[in-house]
Length: 233
Image 1 (cartoon, one colour):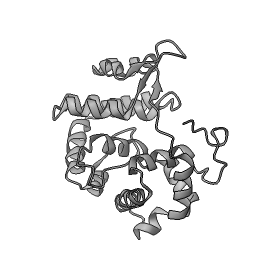
Image 2: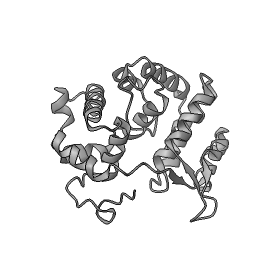
Image 3: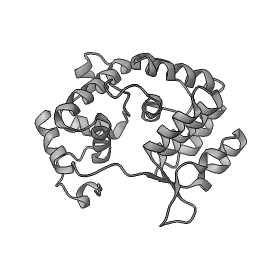
Image 4: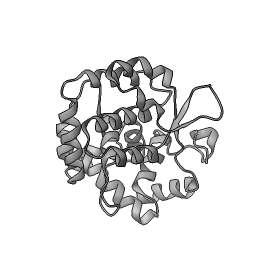
């Protein structure tokens, strides 16, 4: 596993995650009824492409996390920003699923409790307790990653979605086998600890490695070119 990962790091080590493009007009009608349309001002305006598009980055999420603190409405704003970042312009279901979550009466306690669990290092507990309409693992693990403000020395939460899993499977790593169980909370914590343990000797961060696996989307044996993988450094 480490040998194959090292080859990927050597190949793509100069690449970095770019901000995600989103279209505020696509989201506005879903957010306005819930008083959350102001979140669409996050990030920066695009200088090229479709007029009105904006860019949102992981740093934007981190900045918003610091600003909102413990405020319940602020946590909801951060959640909406995470959903926007995770959807970009390619996931057309993102606005609808976000509205489903905003309509769920459990949203405030779920965001508060899972944030607390993540900050306490109980990622399995956060996984077990997250339940909101319209939000599956691919997105609620993005929430975990966004709210985790622990020291970098900790195994901080990471995103686990189908694209990452597809790359890991292609590399020969199967989550339930590594965890010794099919229970997803344990499989998630095993994934997080594994990625951190791999990243350190490779000289990269676990977040960067997660991003690379996401963008490769299972194409771990493709030629190391932008045309093959879609990654542009």
